[in-house]
Every structure is written in C-alpha cells, then in structure tokens.
Length: 193
Image (cartoon, rainbow, N blue to C red; front, side, top):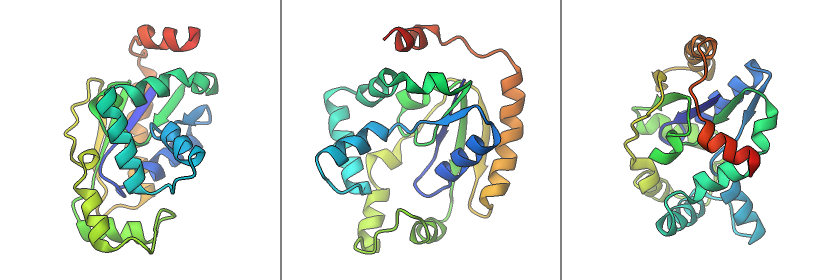
C-alpha cells in the first residue's frame, strides 16, 4: 500500500513520513526526488531547492512521467513491507501512485519560513527573497486532485509534528484494514521489471 503526502514546502511532509515509518515497522520511505538527488550527487551539483526544482521540472518537460517511471523502476521498496510512503508528491501523476493520500496545508508564510530556518535544509547563503521565489515555482503551485482516498487534510500551521502524526495515523489505520486497492498493472510491471 502506498501513502502519498503532498503539500507546500516546510509544511511537515518529511516529519510526518518519518513518524509513520517509526510507527508502522513494515514501512519504507521512498521520496519521488531520490533519483533526482542521486543525479545531483553524480554530477557534483549542490543539492538545493533551486537545482531540484530546475532539473526536476526540466526533465518533466521531456517526459512528464520521468520521475514516476524512475520511482517505479527502482522497485527496491517492494521488499520493505506493506506500506510505502512518498513524502514529496508534487505533481498529479505522483499523487496518483497513492492508495492513500494525505494533504498537508500551511497557511502562514512566516511559519513556513521559520520552519525552514530551523530545518536541516536551511542554507544561510539563500536570501529570504530567493526563498520566496522558490515558493512561486511550478512545483509549489500544483493543484492536486487525488484519485485514491484522502484520509486526512491537515492544516499544520499551529500543530506540532506529533499532533499531525496522531491525526493522520488513525485514519491510515482504518484504511489499512480495508482491502488494498488493486494496483496490479504498474506493481506487477515493477516486480517483473
């Protein structure tokens, strides 16, 4: 079963994903951007939001499914258990991979920047103007319409990571108890790959 988490930057997607991995012992966190980060490392490019957005978006112009296909081809996640978490679903085709979707919202730019300043992603060489510009990138402006059930829409503005986790995991528990939605087409292709 695949859980996708979508929302704006610094709304708590990765914190929630890590909490889910700790809670569900047979869970594997597999970000969409993993292959993109590998590409930046291979070419010794800095791993910053601007490079991730520019290269990721540029390759999507060649093939809109480039990152989804790379994610499916790297099927190592299938052996890690029955729950896989994508914590950076930013495009419709990425959200469509999910059997369960979680949407996080953050309604305060000040809170968003404050979270950035205290995160491990903080880069003191990036000005607040540059950071604001990254908020305007296409990856931050997508309006996603999940095709799978949405188990939670959470405004994280005034909630701790623990509060967000508690709100989400009870809803995921209920969904896990239901039979998993049939995803044989791509899952079988990934396993036989």
